[in-house]
Length: 364
Image 1: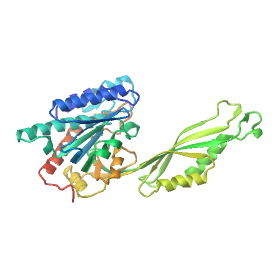
Image 2: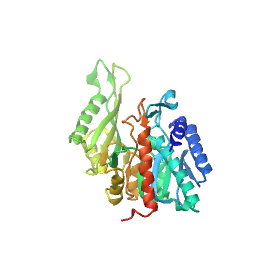
Image 3: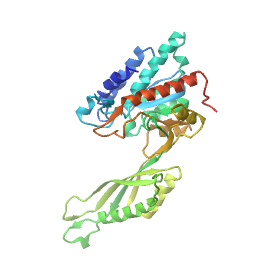
Image 4: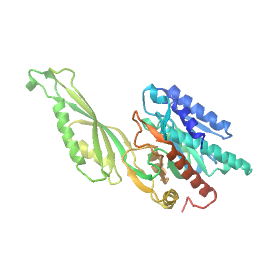
């Protein structure tokens, strides 16, 4: 485990953001080379420039699959120079999500060395690993494509939660664009025009009525008006105006019915940008076993989304888990608590050891 922190620091130094595909590729190359040198056979797929890597005991299949991503959100140059302060390692990707890449790499090497001493090889691994390069921009070319080729009995997405919290559900996402049309005119004679911003604002009030629920835990659908654009000069009546909406929904909602209800209630044009499914990993015996193994930790729901949602296409059970980052992901203070990273490694190693020894069934 002492190799994990230096390896994580090296991974953080790659500026693997969406507008630097060369750095994403370089990071993938480094990971592939490291794993190959460790004696592992690595599969690679590049879809529209997005690299994905996976290591499995069988061809494109594993009993347990650990999933993580090596792309990160943008940051200043200083965040790509990792540093330690006490028990914390700071840097972009420290907790989202390069800690998971380092953990998976070290765990794979430890297991392949162990198996070698028993006269066995990669085919005897009780787990596999999937590492992708586009989670932060939707994951469609990474996990979205790789999971069409791969299968597993249980998946742990290392991209959320904490050592004390297993995430078993995540909300789905709907992205909508609203465009209001009006009639342009001089700002001194507004009666000669039709202000598209007025129309858009009225429609946004109507949209909000579809989200009037409230619960203490906020496990209900929500809407965020993320962008509004309209007009080009203060003395003009704008002829069009636009808004971008971010909707999060739960298993109690039909996203397509919600879209149609909004469409029927507004005069603006409604463009459906995307509809992403929610994640529901279930709360079956394997999840309960994993929670008990870690000390009867809490099983929770999460409002954000991750690549775990692609598991729902095949009905694959699983959880989302991670170390302690104190909700610092995507901030200038992003960090991971090193001790919690070691704790998580220990939990995962014990889990796959139990799978290897057939102490837990993945198919009950």
